[in-house]
Every structure is written in C-alpha cells, then in structure tokens.
Image (cartoon, rainbow, N blue to C red; front, side):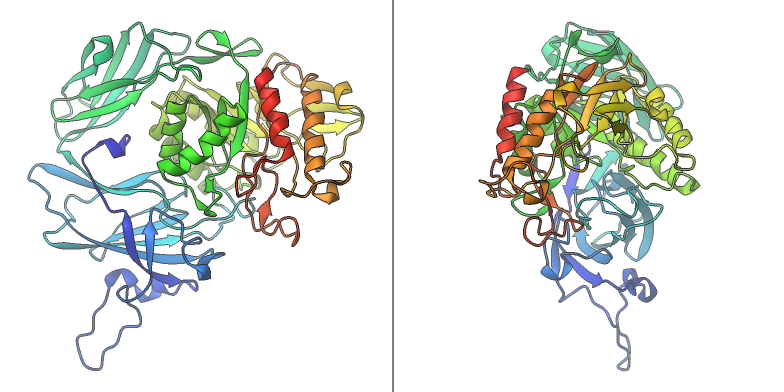
Length: 568
C-alpha cells in the first residue's frame, strides 16, 4: 500500500516489550502463544512483561549495550486496542524490518517477510478482536548465504523494527496503488494508472491538481485498473526549483492526497538530460546511519541531518547506498532539490544460481519501485553493486531483473555498478556484460587507495565498452582519521588527511580524462560503523572514507570536492 503515512493510520510506534533470543530457542517454546500458568505445578520460562523495552522505529543494536553486535533473534510485543468500523478493512503496515520478520496477532501467525529495507503489510480485518490485541514480531537479522545482501558487507547489520509501524483502515474498496508521472521524453504529458482493490472494482476515478485547475476523469475496469493520460503546463521539478504539486486521487470510496513533482530524465546520446537540458550529477554516497547516534537513521530529522550536509557540499544527487533508504530520506530529498539514486541490496557475493535468490530480487525490486514510483526525486534505479561476470547465472539473472524493472517503470534510468575494470599502464579497460542492459555505465574505482597510481592522473587513458553511453564514477576515495594531520602526504598507511586529500586532488585531474563523464560520487559523506574495519588506532570499527567524521568534522578532502562542485 503506497503513500501509507497519508492514509487513515494509527501509529504503533513507541515502546515495545522484547525478549532477547540469541540462541533462537523462542521458536521451540512458541513465544507467540504467550502461555499462562493454570495449575500450581505449572511454570513458563518466558515473559514479555517485566523485561526490557525497545523503541520502534529503531534498531536494537544501538539501544542496549548487550545487543551492540547481535546478529540474531529478538521478539517484539505490542498491545493495542482497536475498534474496526462496519464496512471497513484493516491492515498492519511495516516500513521495514531487518531482516526476517514473522508476524503474529493474538497467537495466530498472519505472515512472514524477508528483506530489511522495503515495506510490507498484512490484512487483519477478520483477525482483529474487540478489546486488547497482542501483536508479536519475531525479528532475525542473521546473515544468510542466499539473502540480499548476502554474508559479507561493509556496514553494521542493524537489526530490529527499524521503520514506522501503522494500522491502516480503508473502506471495503480502496485505492491500492497509482502511477502519476510524466511520460518518458515528454515535459507535459502524464501517462499513468490507478489500481482499485476491493469488492466494487468498477468505479469512477478523478484526478485533481488544484494549482493547475486540472480535473481528469476516468473509470476503472473489472480488474480495478484505470488508465490515465492528460497534459498540463507543469512547472518542472529540478534541483534548482524543486516544485511539488498537491495531487488528489478520488475514487467513489476512497481519497488520497500526495505531493508529486513532474520532471523528465533520459539519456540522449552520451549525455544525461533533465527536462531537456544536459545535467552533471554532483553526487555523494550516503549510508542510512545517524552518525552522531551511531544508529539506523529513520526520521525526518535524521534525513534532514544527512541531506543538509550533502547540500552544503554542493551536491545535486545522493546515492542511497546500498539498499532502499527510508521514505523520509526520499521525500526530504525531493523537497530539498536532491536527485536520488536508489539501489537494491544486490551487493557483491550473491548466489545468483539459487532460484530462491531470484525470487527475492524480484520481490525487493517490486517493493522498491512500488513505494517510490511517484517520487520525482528518484532518477536512477540501481539494480546491483560490485557483482562479477564469472559468477554463475549472474548476468542472466540481472538482465532479467532489468527487463522487469523497465516494465514496472519506464520513466527512470537503470544502472548496474561494477568494479571489475582492468587498470594497468595508467589505462582503464572498462568491460562488463551488464553494460549492455544499463542506461549509464557506473564504475567504482579506488585508485590511490586499494590500487596505487601507475602514472600521472591527468595522463590516464580509457577504453570503455559501449562508448556511446554516459559514464558515472559511483565510488572513489580513501580513508583518513579526522585530525590526523601534519605528516607525509604520500603514505597510505599514515591514515592522514593529507593523503586522503591527495587522492581527491589526483582523482579530479583524472576525471578530465574520462569520456562521456556524466557525474561522480565520492565514497562517502560520513564515517560509518563497520565491523570489518579493525585497525585499533585509526578505524576502531569505522570505515574512515567519509568526507566528514562521525562527529561531523570536515576533513581536508571535503573542501576539494566542495570547490570541484562549485566549478561544475
């Protein structure tokens, strides 16, 4: 159900009782049944009452010291009262739970979901009862070999109910989904649809944009689908003018209001064009982490904190790595004039030969696109990051996923990020079978950090497959501990700001040699928590590639990028 916050909601956010289950024994004891003693000889070895509580939304790792590094099971419980009106339907909606969720209502399992970064819901119309209801969620963030992401990844695996939880009440027939965006290649024509769900699927549908005095009438068919096509003189959304319109969708039984911007993004030749004008992506990579709290970001305040720093750097695009971020990030970016690169957690060592993985990729793609298809700030769907040509079934699987994505949404650019280019004799050979399916060629390269320079940066040469496509440097950089200065700028092992600054200075020289360069994005905005970063002096469990420390302190490299973006 899209636009969940704008519907008739009852929040279940707040304090939830929890049972910590690091050994996974709760399943055997059937905690969801909440057994009670009946005889004097009875006893039950668990209880939600009298134990710890955790805040929802929020990750469990940052809320209790004993859970800091937990990758395992926590059981959540929330009691609530609700009286459903006659002729209404009720859904329980989760913005995200990382990673596996089993959901029980009043002792009955109502559903499961896999995936830590996309929303899901279950209908509970016939399962809600008068009086007190008990909602229990088993949350398991253990890494899975056939999960998305898989076993190894470079960020803290924040577990828990990390985004909003709502009860959503609708009529018997409601507007389930809709797509209202400009047709590809047009700056005035909207091509979209409305989907009605319920007993009375054939309904009159009205789209209203009051500011434009626009009223469009259509009708849904027996499947509940209503096609729409209309034109208007829109003030187009762009980073310089992030214009949003109030859009009202009315059926005979439901009304939804949304704020929607209209823009057109496409590739023409070897350029990226926004609203008919060539644009250069001035990007930055961001993880969904509040650096000051060392916790998963989820709120509008968290989003504003992160995105404001991106704006100060001079960015017009944020790459939300390496998974779909919370809805507040996307909506705040839209209001602030920041384009969004949204990415699936198809990260490095994925089991593409496992048919279960293919189903998971398909589901996560559909959930990502469904939530944000009307957010004009989202201009790029990234379907994978740093996967490898030699992996069994990898290219076939991702080519198929690309085809599905284009069918779901034809209005945005699609890319696959690679890091398998060859670098020798100060020359890049950029090849990957996925480039055939991508609108832009996205390359992660860490010359100067993981690989030393082999000549002068300004003399670098490039041999890029598909030379007619735009090229985006989606990651580059190196690590430095803020305040570690006044030493040699030519030693990577020094972890000095001067060395990081030198990497950036050299990278900017190299950018002038890249054919069809359409944008760059440093890795990354803030230093962030990562258990694989084990240097006891310089890292201390943090990836130090940030332009900002986890306290928001600006490293020397920040100013290099700030000046570069001012010049573009």
